Amino acid sequence: MAQTETSSRGNWNSKVGFILAAAGSAVGLGNIWRFPTEVASNGGGAFLLIYLICCFAIGFPVMVAELSIGRKTDRNPVGAFKALSSNKFYPLIGFWGVLCGVMILSFYTVVAGWTFSYVFEEIFFFMGLESWANYFAEVSNGVKNGIFSTIFMGATVSIILGGVSDGIERATKFLMPVLIGILIIMIGYVSFQPGAGTGFAEYLKPDFSQISAPLIFSAMGQAFFSLSLGMGALITYGSYLSKKENIPEAAAYVTLADVGIAFLAGLLIMPAMYMAESFGVSIFSESGELLASTDLIFQVLPALFHSLSTTAGMIFGVSFFLLLSMAALTSTISLLEVPTSYVIDEYNVKRKKAAMMIGGGILIISLIISFDISLIGTIDFIFSTVGLPLGGFLICYFLGYVWTVENALEELEHGYPALDSSIFKAVWPIFIKFLAPLAILYNLLEAIGLVSYIEQLF
Image (tube, rainbow, N blue to C red; front, side):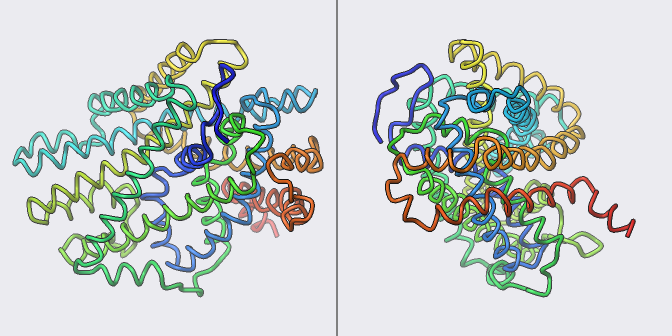
């Protein structure tokens, strides 16, 4: 797939580069801390099994849809829908994705800043400078949040300025292997610590009695969010793909990479949680419920690191929060690339100007959130919990009934000469036209409370 950047938009230089970049977009803080705690709170291995099914039965078909729309048009999410339909309504689907990406990045940058600040918290704690350590650990400190949000946005913009191959692809080719390497090393360390066996058992042993509608929809929501679907990131990344690329194969690799890293994260976080219990650091609230994921990450695990020896605690603590920071950065890159690509395509703005203008605008919102972190919950609900499934549903509808699966399959034949004789051609249209949109719609209605309301009526 190697090629040069023949246009101002750019292209991926290699298949591996695209897969790592797309997987990096999917792999983020949700995989590293939210996924393991969702597993712990929802039946252990049972949730893991349902999550895997949702990733491949719903996430994979939608990912193929987004990549095919992007490659067919060579455009950003808004431009892609403009190119495929003369109806003025459909570009709003793309614009909604761009807006969701902007708003998610606005609070994600703040949370990413927290993870990076904890690297310094661990260093100063083990240096005996506890007052400085407490400063970096103070989540509600607006000035500190603003400083680290600015640092994180600066790092993200600097990568986007490099373009597709020299910026995004080069960065993710470095970040993703390092991230995986740190994960594996830390798993190896935790595996031999007290309490790790209990954590592994809770993670891998399924409790099928806990499988219920809420568990299934929770797993579906986690799968959808973790794969970066519904906000146009994969339409944008797909627009940089060569016609020689086999899209279903590439989407399968990206899905496997995302699922694999989420699984590895569980092998780290779950044993670490029960390791903390063995060191007298409780992972449960007074009512006996598992603590929220943010409490586990920013309170329980630092307390665990601080209970270890100086050398082990510092290495483990610093490595863990560097891991989180790198996972966050691979996601912020894709979140910023979506609106940057939109401005480049639709307004003919140079990449440098577009990236700095969009990044600066989002940073202003992030600075406001830095001083009022209660805004995170509201923005997350509107643009993540509701916005991403809504975008995914509309993309399924558009591809299935407006652009049509026949046209999409014609695009997929590029790079997939055996498509006509494959089971994929027979199965994918059913999933994209019926199963995936219905499942997404139900999950969306559940998220906004309509399902419960209807059940009460009857």
